[in-house]
Length: 142
Image (cartoon, rainbow, N blue to C red):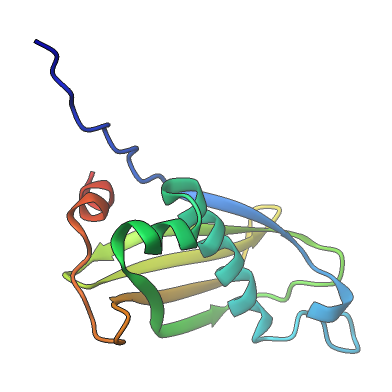
């Protein structure tokens, strides 16, 4: 008799994604324009989800769930500049029934430049909040 078992989900790890600062990210003085930190955080979040769950399209196909930003806040500490290589982290802070909170430190050579805190909500096709599926919850809580 052959038994099959579900694959063990990979535990969620803190994640870092490199981002280079280009001209389009800066003002005339070569300083990163403040809303672009949100863009850097989004890129890192997308790669974080890809690393743990496959593409966001695959996540949707498997779960019927979309992730949308409910809340975002930024604490600025220092400026990033043209040509800087940044490290954008993604750390899971809290998991709720239909949402989770991520902390995203943005650093240059170890110096903290900004911290983005974002709350993502799982929604269905109708735009209503939906519970985080058990297979994702298991990964988040491991």
